[in-house]
Image (cartoon, rainbow, N blue to C red; front, side, top):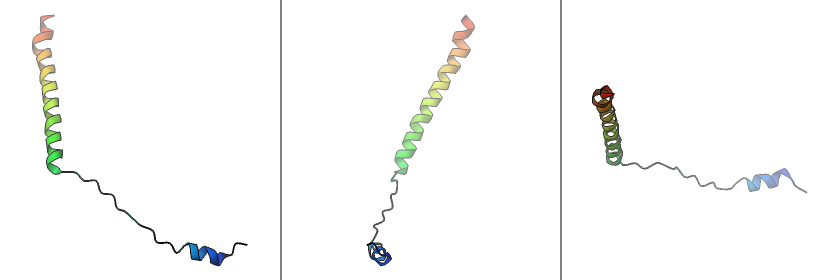
Length: 58
C-alpha cells in the first residue's frame, strides 16, 4: 500500500541545476557583421550599376 509519508522520503532528492550561457566572442560578432555589411553594400552597388548604366541602353 502506498502511504503519503513514502512520497516525502522520495521528494528529498537533490536536483542538479546547470546554467547554460551562450559564449560569443565580440570580435567574431563584429567580423561577421562587417562581412555581411560588405555583401549588402556590394549588392546595392551592383543594382545601382544595373539601373544607372545597363537598363537605359534597352
